[in-house]
Amino acid sequence: MSTDKKLVDLAIKLFSIDAVKFGEFTTKSGIKTPVYFDLRVIVSYPDVMESISNLLLELTMKDLKYDHVCGVPYTALPIATILSVLTKKSMLMRRKETKAYGTKKSIEGHYKAGQSCLIVEDVVTSGSSVLETVRDLRKEGLIVTDAVIILDREQGGSKNLEVDDVKIKSLFTMSSLIDILLKNGKITEDTVTKVKLYLKETQAPVIEKPLDRMSLTYEKRAELAKNGVAKQLFSIMATKKTNLCLSVDMTSATKILDLLEKIGEHVCLVKTHADIIEDYTSDFISRIKQLADRFNFLILEDRKYADIGNTVSLQYSKGLYKVGDWADCVTAHSLPGEGILKALNSQNGVNRGVFLLAEMSSEGNLITPDYREATVAMASKYPELITGFVCQNKDTFKDPGLIQLTPGVQLESSKDDLGQVYNTPEKVILEKGGDVIVVGRGIVAAKSPETQAVIYKDTLWKCYLKRVSGKME
Image 1 (tube, rainbow, N blue to C red):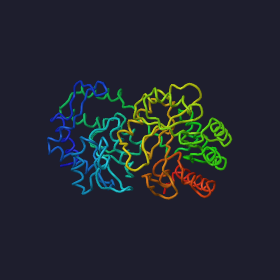
Image 2: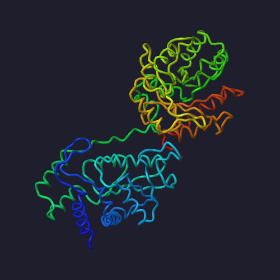
Image 3: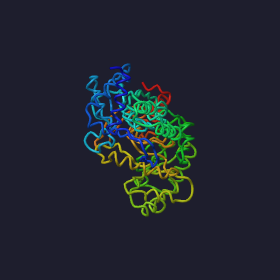
């Protein structure tokens, strides 16, 4: 039997089992449509699944090279399984929701970074479902450039996928399918006219390719930042050529000021813990602000606010420390909910910023993927307040106008006696996506803090330049 005859038979069979319906339907988004596809029913028809799989293999996959196949969940999974068996290629499975327990994987199966994966999908309209799968696979280091599908609705999905460097091959387009059904007396000319008019008037929204913050310079990201402190910090980094944040976790105000006199020129941000300073006075604040102005760095008070909104408002603006008077930005937990951001956002006066804790570098911390995602979602409601996130991974957030503040960095990987895990500059910037890198004991406890600060500054900056150049190897 010829290939064309097989396609005709499959189209008629899809129509007969109500996988393709014509009439008046309402989509999930509320749009009226004269045609509806429900390919989930094919699991009840082994002959149809066999026919689809064989035709995909013959017509769309013949010249493609790939190491794995992955079906877009969930309708395409049975077809992907059959194709895996037919081609003797391993199958990967993408979870729609990442587990918060066990391995916490979003992609199941055995694979290696650098291998290629072919996407299998049933119907493409806007291409968004395919793109979600593509991006999760690419996060794991897999190469994804091709997708094979049963039906292209011709509503913009193929163009959206091309923007993200994914080419699709389909068994049918909407036009070819209705032409087959018309020629075989299954639908009328009137139905064809309605469908073609619908295709012409109803295109899926264009999916913009998201900006990759890993490849953007600090200057460009300063233009994209909505928070004033983030804009300022990006600009300072670009001007001073440093992405080093010094953590002065010291109990002596005098020693902190002496240290900053020596290495203030090498840092973009200074992270303080005012409540551990034993000789804290208002004079200390005056002098550290003078140093910040002279050396052009910002001050982050690592307070990690985590109380109800009213209490946080008082902690920020009142009491002994009056943090809101002098800190350019602070850290906070999202655990109490939006009240904490409302409290910090209600403070009047000069521009301030907040780094929300989305992840921690300590071993055994209790932050889950769901908590992290909820934190990022909460932050999106306060774009003018949020400077960025304290986190460990490049995929925690996408917005290039926000800053990834990453602690737990030393020149060599290690772990201290209290469970603090340290990564190298290369790993943190090139792999993990760190923008501003927090270093404490690696400099403070060194025999020559100034010398060590220069080493960290140069090493971190070289990693950043390598990252934005695109030469990651």
